[in-house]
Image 1 (tube, rainbow, N blue to C red):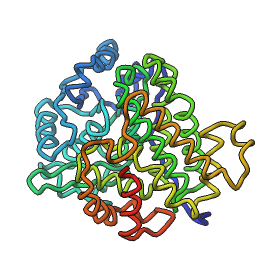
Image 2: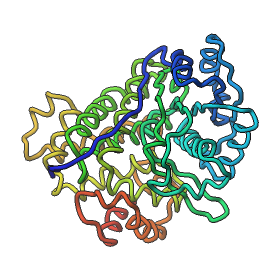
Image 3: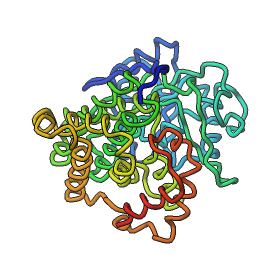
Length: 395
């Protein structure tokens, strides 16, 4: 599993802590930006999460020129084009994306159009198309899960063609990610659980997949430890600012880990399930994680066993014989999922979601095999393998 050669890249400045939002104006002026546009969604605005961002800017004499708050949960090329039009009309010079994965991906795509010109975002789809740095771009995540604030990828739906367009370029990385616990205090329990398990999955897959490396390992293990120590505490006390900050940092660290070491079969199955059954990504991650680890176990015994230390702490780790640690890690993840199911009914099986039919498993398996993540899974996966994992995850 040791790679003789690897690359690690994360040029995003992370600004984190209880007054992180107040630093946005300083970062903007440092890049000569005076007319920022906020890209967000209705839910974020309704929760009052824009208020501290706007207040921070106004206190520094920076005017928020335009606020677009209509980003849908599954952003589309039409939305991106509309926002770019407003950006140009209002003569904005920078973007602040406030929200979850969709708002952040939308901000990335808008930045391509307003920086490169034109109205056709599709022609920039793929990898290596962008050749120049884009406009100043800042991200304020309001969920602690996707890690989009530190990844060089965006996915936007082309509604006319009915396909998801992927965009990959290091120029999509924001200039800074602002991690402030105030932004996740109002997250409902089921979203808190699903997004934290998204981060957990990013980190576990990053630590056990083919392209793992010492630097991504450090971020992955730290993220796993933070989620393990803080998630249930936050579920029981949603206004726990310290716990919220821990989860938000875990999400960012897991994002840095997996964007440098890739992910595996959990993501392939999750992407396919999301596309076919329209289940939220974090839920899919949480659901498939233990079943995929069981499938991969003989290829990842050593790293998976190491994770017991971060999942359960030093006492449990030292009391567990080395030969049993991999199984104990999976047990720890199952135990966490059970605890979440008890608190917010986060589904543990496909059947519990109520949105997946057994007859769809075949199509999910087919689609998962075509997903790029599968290349980095530590064990070869055939269609039969994928199906058997899906059947185990069914009930």
